[in-house]
Image (tube, rainbow, N blue to C red):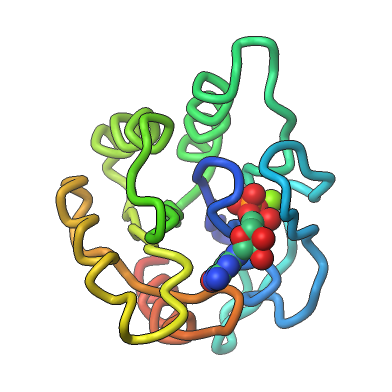
Length: 162
Ligand code: GDP
Ligand code: MG
């Protein structure tokens, strides 16, 4: 079976935009309104000659337990089934309580975790990414899923971790 890379994170951080960037086409639904998306859960992907399965947890609908519990539950399943985790945070918002729920899960896993500071569209926004060192998940990787900034370097490193 192909290695699995899971993208976890709360709604509206840009998970689907990152899926599209990695796939090189608009397949995942990017939503301007946070919440429910119609995205698929997994996509066949390839980067630098390595094939893998990309799992986007955002495609699962929040259940009655509310958004925090739902995001955490989805992340838990994804962490379990994947080989490498890409945890996406909105660098313009900074870590929220929902993000913290996921961070608690990620601290427990022995699998490689990439902390992705998304929406760093230009160099001016880089300091906001550095604030995410406080999460205790290692080096925040500043990227712009929308414009592609930083994504190639990130993917190169993710492939090394597979
Ligand atoms: P998801 O809910 O985590 O899948 O987030 P989406 O991919 O649907 O994106 C949510 C919103 O953030 C949309 O309005 C996107 O256009 C926007 N967005 C995603 N990535 C970026 C980025 O790198 N920069 C900026 N400025 N906006 C982004
Ligand atoms: Mg989405």
